[in-house]
Every structure is written in structure tokens, then in C-alpha cells.
Length: 387
Image (cartoon, rainbow, N blue to C red; front, top):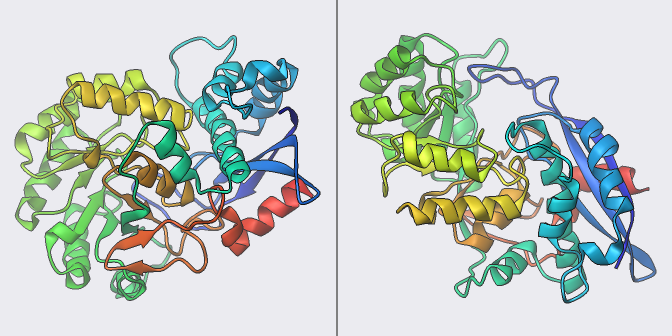
């Protein structure tokens, strides 16, 4: 097998929403296609992917550094024993001549390339990526059923009264029974009122998570924690800067409910530091590393090994993502669950067009690969990329 071409294009997210820190109206995502010399039904087999949601497209890093390294490599140096591409070898090649540390944008660029390998190989095997991941990592209890929750509750320009309730009611009608909303973009009193409104739909605190997107100082994080303590929420996410492990550890001593963080950690070493210094409590706190941002499946598996070696359970891993990449990761590795963006961050957010949510659970489609082809708006973007 040989990679014959690597295609990438930047696609805008179609969402004018805000969290406590940023507005997404100008955000972009890299679509990636690995074209190979393998042919099925008269067409080359192509591995497709993108680099998650919430950062930016990585056109320059892919086109100027990583793609040239892969295209210049000896084809056999990138293969597994079965003749298919090796995700681990592709990642290693893409990262040649890169210094350790500084796991930022290049982690997202590498993710796009590494994840495309999984889509490619699953298509060659005519199986979903989740099944391929499970077999690759020796998971004998693979199940296509995944627990999911609806992520939303953003701040909208000129938001009207009742909009939050209408949004969550719509998610409930789709089959979701757990929800996540944003905090930190308004005053403490206003956010508590928003939580009360969301609870009229969620019903109980254990059905509602809140996310501050790293906005707070320790003083602010503690004040919010005190105000929310009585709600018994599902979790309190990214109260402070994601690399401020001291803040997280101090907050964990005051806030008795579950804390969640990790979506902005992109390497095994970052996760090791979180486990050692972030005050994470086994069987309570949630880890949210995103395979589309952290060098792909290969590095995510290393993160899991790190966590489990320190007494944490993978069932407390809920990857940030809100799309098909995370869904297949959760099913393949037997994680706790997955978030979904049912109506925002298009064309990447959400699952296939015919996917059904029943009582907060979804079945992974049997479509080969990640199943991007079952999502019409995303299928159109990939079609424009590969021609």
C-alpha cells in the first residue's frame, strides 16, 4: 500500500455562539483525505478525517511539514505486518524532526492525519472504526452502544427569554436525557438563574453538567462551586485554566461534586501531570481528552495507560468532541460516554443523519470507517475536497 496524495482544506464552522471565553463564528476545521493506491469498485480507497471542533484548521502545519514527510517516506516504512497503513508509524513519521513539548496546534494537525488512517483501514476491512480500534487494542467486550449527552446551552447574540429551555426541550425530544450548558459568560447570579431554567428540563442536577471553559480564577471558581453545591450536578467542567493544576487541586478540596477537565490537554505527559498534581479523585472526576486534538487514537491510548497505571478508571473518560470521531473512540475503547452537538458546529457536529438517540444511548452505525458518508452536509464537504 502507498499514500499517493494528501489533501486538506479549511472549512468554517457554521455557528455564531459563544462560551465564557470565545465566539465560534470565525472558527475553522481542517478536513483531511489520505489518497492511496488501493482500489475498490474502480475508485481509490481514501481515508477521511478532521481535527475535531473548538480549535482552528491546521493547513500550514499539514501542508508544509507533515504531509511532505509522509509522502517522502518509503511506503513500506509506514505499514503494519498485514500490509495496511500503521497509525503509529504514520504519526511517528509526521512528527519527525519535531521537538518534544509544546503540544499545541501540531497535535491537532497530526490528529487529522492519524485519524484518517483508521478510517482508511476500517474501509478496507468493511467495518466501523470502533470495531477496528477495539480489536487493535485487544478489547474483547466491544459494544456499539454508547451513552451520550447533548452539549449546548451557549450564549447567543440577543438571546431571547426561554431560548435555553427551548433548546434543551428539543434535545430531550431527540432522545437525550442528559445535558451540558455554559457558565462564566454572565454574572454569577445570572448563571445561577440559567442553571435553574435548565433544570426545569433536565429534572435533576445529575442530568446537567456545566462548563466554564477555563474562565475563572481560583476565587471565582470557588464562588461558583459554593453557589452550585446544592444542585448535585453531573459535573463542573474546566473551572480554571486547563494547565493550572494547582487551581484544580484546590477546588477539588472545596467542591464535593465531580470536576471535569482534560479537553485542552494534548499529550500523555500533560495527562500524567494532571493525574499527579491536579487533585483528580478516582471514581468521581471526569477526564475529557479529545482524540481529534491530541495526536489521534495512538496518543489517546497512551493517555489511558497513564491514567489506569495511577488508579483511574477509563469509565470516567468522556472525550470532548461532539462528533463521530469521539463516538467511535468511546465505543472502541470502552469509555464512559460521549458528548454530542446535535444542532451546532456544523457540518462536523453530531452523528449520521439517520442516527437515533434512545434514552441517552446511541448505537454506532455499521457503516465502514467513521461513517462520515452518512452525514449529508459533511459528505458534501469531503466530496468537494477529493473531487
